[in-house]
Amino acid sequence: ISARLTEDGAGCPRIGARTAKRGEAALIYGPYARATARRRPVHRAAMENPKLWGPGGLCLNIVEDAGLEVALLDGALKNNLPKLEFWGKITGTTDSYLIAVGYSQEYPFPKKTFFWTTTSEAHELKVMKVLDDDYAAHAKTLLNTPFTGDPATPYEIVRPEGYEPPPPKQDENGEPIPPEEFREEHKLAYHVSVIDNDVSIIPKGAWICDATHQVIRNVTNCGLTHEAAGSLRNYLHFRYPENDRSKQALVKPGVVRHGDFLDNLQDDNPKGCWGVHYSPDAKYSIVRSFYWPGSYFCHEIKTGNYVSVYFGDGLPNEDILFML
Image (tube, rainbow, N blue to C red; front, side, top):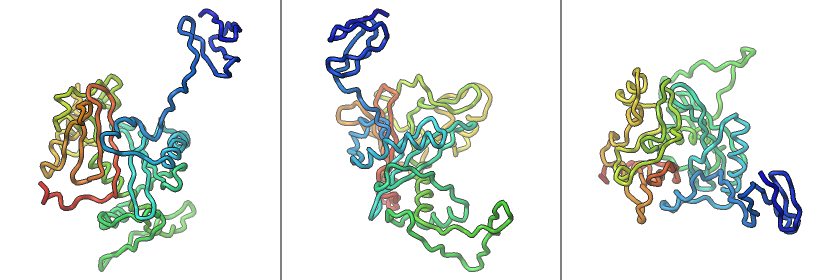
């Protein structure tokens, strides 16, 4: 690599040189030397593919985006995850919840770890609680209750007659641990798990099952063709398979085709609960759930770019059967 002269005439034998005249950093790479007069683009950690939000009219405000820019990087570092991705935003009456998700390799399907924060504290993410069967059953009864936006809001647990509580958990000294009060933080964890199970979507071919039957990202994914992007059968649930056909495909010996080991949106009930259409410029395909109105999936046709997020109040559309 040859040394080059910068604008002030100072030669430098190193790969990197600094322009003293303008006070700007300029990297010198042999024949490709160029002073970086323009500001370099900043990686937007809060939004994996910001342009894919455009067709849905979705965005974060400046406070939320600036806070998540730091929180996602910090959360991934503290929890030893490759990276955290923005999952969605659930609105409440006084504040909103911002949700992130991280993936860690487990056999055969990646493990999802969810994180949350509020708009007022967007700079710091907390690990989302994992509910036991008792709390999950109670949270299910609150599925149609709006969020307040305060994670400390208590909810009374109504027990049926004859209910016998399970034996209390014990600490390392054998002492009983008092049960934790059910709060909106627990309700949020349940809603996120249910929504993610129903509307976390990927295009066919984005993730593959390798020779060891481990589900991994397909780094060579080139996306769907224009014709394929308009068909619901080319979109899959990104969750551990629930129907028997997909489960068998994941564990059977031999090669597994990329559309066989995940549940297909086309098989969901009731029929017609999904809608797929093109953007006005026909560059993107958009998939929406009519049961979870806040769900949004967008795929840039003929590329590996896609995004699956949720922006809503966290409540399902219980009137869907009257709409179909």
